[in-house]
Length: 203
Image (cartoon, rainbow, N blue to C red; front, top):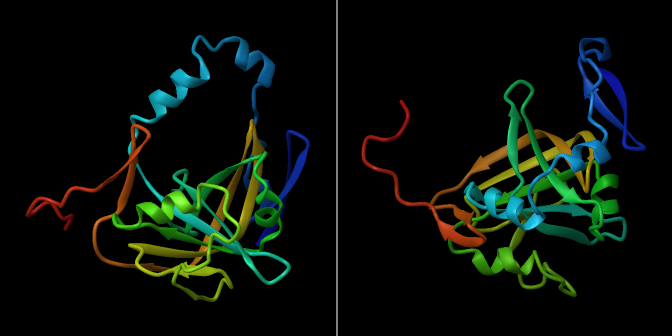
């Protein structure tokens, strides 16, 4: 395994890759030039994105003082099966961004349909978001929230500064599947996944 150093938007990131020579630099357009071609407002863009239904996660990490930080995210997605990679993003203005940038490991909790209030709690300012929230600790040293439909424990793989967000790529060390329906976010609202039709399970 080698180390790939990538400079983007003034940020140098380190990723663990098989060989650095196997990858080409990522070419990005100049932001000013790209924005001048946009014929839509930020609101219009948000509303169009809201048509794409996503799951809802709470991403957690340990902070240097021994406590934890976490936030609600629907930017979670898969990247690769071999190696097992996932991605998520965090706004560059987020107060907990430095904590995640310095975290070697973190957890991704996929929320169940009955955890709407938990999603709201971790998306709003709160003195202690974890107060009263049942969770257990895993190998990543960060909370695995009880009652979720899936859990992923990840180690840092790569990080890129793109526009007004930072993109994180994690390598999955452990994962676990729960049961029940997942929480959805669609058209700026929370919802639940409909029950699967009989015979619709992949074989």
